[in-house]
Length: 97
Image 1 (tube, rainbow, N blue to C red):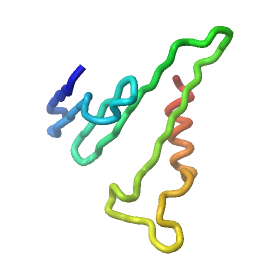
Image 2: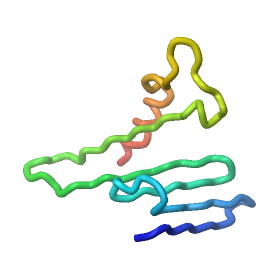
Image 3: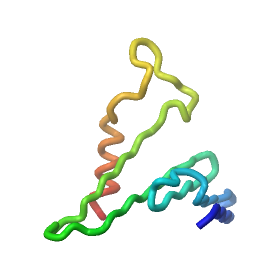
Image 4: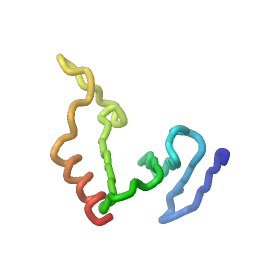
């Protein structure tokens, strides 16, 4: 499937959904943009394994400081481990599923 872009007006702002542009190694990927917020959602799947009685799910949620124009300085130049807010957000996403 190639590049697909859908735009809709919601609440006076434009919601844009794009697929086929990034994360081509994932089974599926969508970039959702609403006003000034952008979210990349990716899905990777494999054939089911026999004998497994649970749904293996991994949620990785990160608020990138570079998106706000802030870059870590000093000794640590990279973004570190997720903070408490990010961990709780990951749990809020995967627990209901």
